[in-house]
Length: 116
Image (cartoon, rainbow, N blue to C red; front, side, top):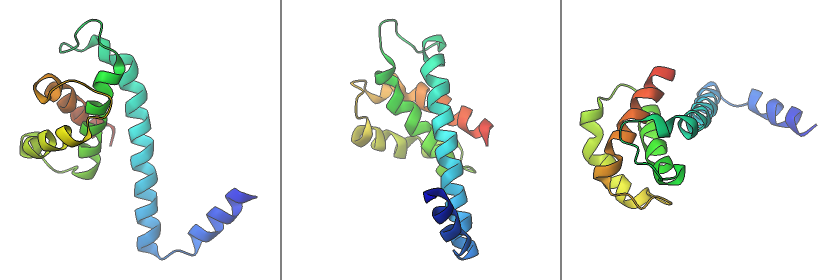
């Protein structure tokens, strides 16, 4: 019943709001898929250091994915300085400095771009 009301309300949104909502949903789906992918893949990456858990890399993957979704037409090299600044503010569970996650952010950005 609740789903019906949510969908029914969405049908009455202006076209631009429906498009924004659809984009938000698509971005969330891609982000969830990317997180699932990286949680399995991270130990196979050349920058991975044995013994480090996914929690040390996950914020870097999330940052790269989010950048790809928010700036789909940008080049990674044009985003690097902003991403480095964001890393200092948003690294949550990771204790790794930027120099140790730069490649993970870039790989996540590349992979997310391929998914869209």
